[in-house]
Image (cartoon, rainbow, N blue to C red; front, side, top):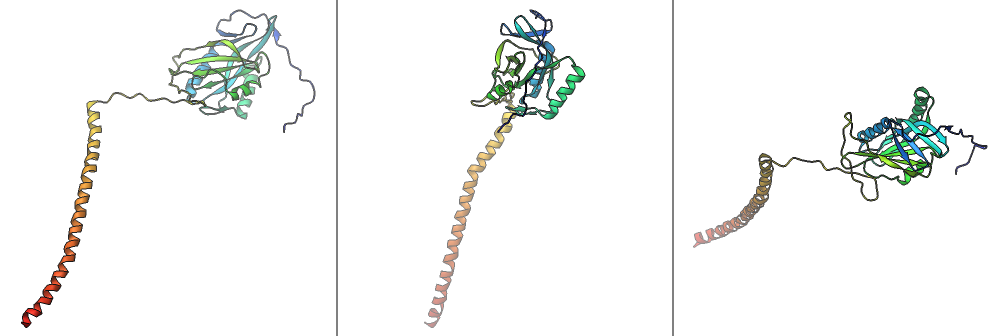
Length: 269
């Protein structure tokens, strides 16, 4: 049973006041009308590349930047994506480690001293653009109204679409971002989820068989057929010969006894 240890009031710093821009060069804008999240294109491209490289497994990481507020309310500017390199990743699950948390804090202090954690991101190695029940539980930990989560989904062609969700209720904010395959990354085939679980499967493409390949495949088939037909015949012939030999062996001693009995009788006469 969980027991609360902390007693008191949590003091939260209000985001700095700054009128929000309509657009920001080099940033993609996710919005629901009152809330906006400006995410750096470099961070989105890095997330897409990492999702392709991690497939068929998931990947996970953190979003860092600055929250702001204006007359419409809070909004966020995400400048960087930090990957959880020590996370335990699988096709349908991903879990960060304590080392990832420590690395995040040290990276924030060393490289982003004016930034803070604004959310998290992870991938689905198939096209499922909605949060799973586990994802929704994780999203509830990001309780500030300006915090967000990003979900990178791979489609059958290897393309990536990134969807955004705001706050602990995982409110969808649009539009989704669809990066292109960059020159430094290679689009990989993806799996299609099975019913009831997050799973994907691919079928390798093979070249059409040539005449030489067909002959090579036909020869073992003919040999197998020949053995299957000839071997039972040879086996039956062998059994028949053994039976005949056993019959001849039983008949020979009987004739010898008859001759032996007839011999003395003939000589006595």
